[in-house]
Image (tube, rainbow, N blue to C red; front, side, top):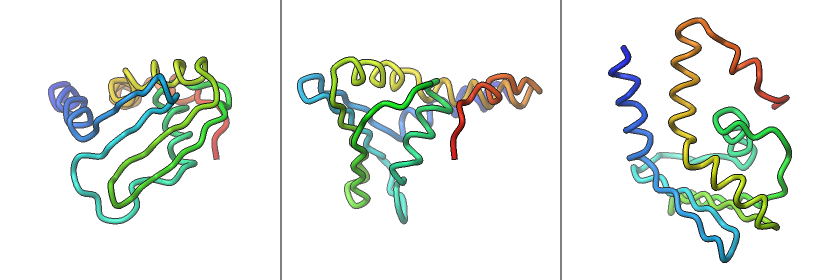
Amino acid sequence: MEEILQRLKGMLKEATVIKSDATKFEITITIVKKIHGNVAEPDEIIVMLKMYGGLREDIPMEVDIDNDAQNITLKFQSEEDFIKVAKIMETLWDNAVDMLTSAMEGDISRIKDIPKID
């Protein structure tokens, strides 16, 4: 099982390309494999950052989703907020799989720690 979960990390990383542009305070996530339907909804991106990235506060950001190009662009108003989320993006997929692993082992403490989300 552990080997499968480690492969899952690799698969998630291969399925997305995450680029940061510090001059524009933008982060773009491109989904590499074709998805039929919507890539995501803006609110789902915020939930993802909170669940898997550990984001604990509300950060003002614009979330633009291009379903045809399969791009999600996060635009920030401040360098501080941009840096905070860029740091989260570096370990997002590792955190997601680690959380799943912990839950499968019966440790739900990380799930309980998630701030209030809809």
